[in-house]
Length: 246
Image (tube, one colour):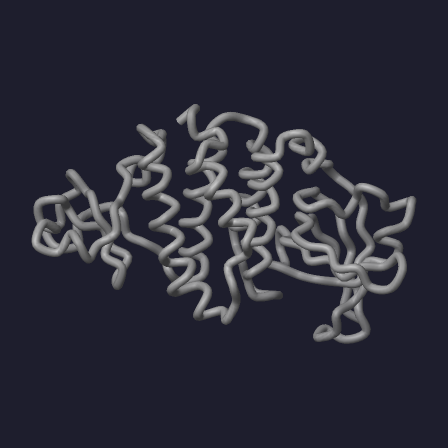
């Protein structure tokens, strides 16, 4: 009988019967994994299975390919930290919903740590740009990584201003001039790890860039729809939200 113990982030919860639920987790060592959690909606487990919470879990099943049963214990109640901030709560839901698109039981080395870091830092300023960088990591993990380090045409690392929608590679402003109408704007802050966006337009361009590859590549490859919560989060940032702080 297969069995393992791990740490996981609660991604989604689907009621199963009166008090049970099928819960999806992003785990540290077992990728995205689901299991039946008995009593998930009972009084003893109240608050445990909130999106974004960190739990210690134990999974077991009769056969490896079975759904299996999960026994979970709350480790950190991250959801409650942003419960009174609708903007950050939407960001948390977006992180979890987007992670829930990933195929189950595949190696997601390093992605658990990157996602947990986003959740831990949600209460602090700058979470919007951290989130869009996280989407770049999500795309890279799914096989659609962008090369934003140098120009695909000239090789220069200076004045990178566009991204090819076909190759996902950066293009220098001068080299891109004849084709710029067919390219995607590249905000400067995405080319420098520690740089913050200069203005709201850079955030809009960043979300448009990752959104293009999410819709046209990841969504089609995984045969899934991008969760509507992403559109709500992007709208909150680009139409106000906390965008005035950028």
